[in-house]
Image (cartoon, rainbow, N blue to C red; front, side, top):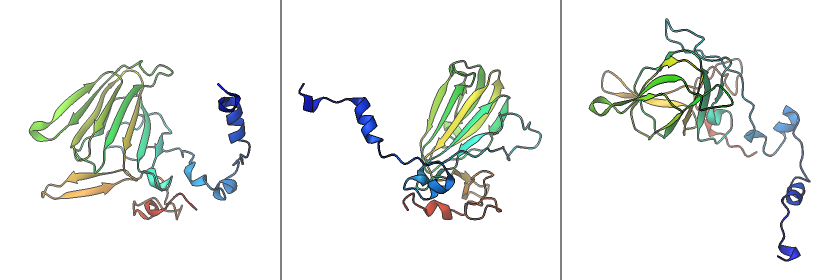
Length: 214
């Protein structure tokens, strides 16, 4: 190979990063070109627990990525929870307008295959409903429009890492009402409003219209 065509990765990396500006403060970030694309997770504590259920079913604090309200233009939201006790997480069947993925891994790090739990999850509705027993590391795709749940962590003998990823800017679902109608409902956790930190987010959707570019 000629000298002109040789490629040295180390040299190339040094060249590419030679002009790096280090973003060290929130002020630097606010004035930077790509600052809106970098987001530090806030610590969250679960605020939705059914009456009679234990509040210590997961490790606290928890981490969530709340989609476009935290990184403008994002088309997905994601949860990161470590379950340590049995818990009936989602009792009501619903569907989404976009695909959702559920991931179940062992949380006895570093071995994510060290899994000792039994979780029941239902896909489909009515006569088509199928309930799956999750007792090994598993990923589930829920196509847009497919009814799913309940989701019940029935046995948790070792910690379970649970990640739910929904490909919408904010978490939400479509629920059937007793009168035959449907309702689309959104939830953005206990985080404050992006424009008024003294107010809890009410899922108005205003922040979903932002873009990451200045």
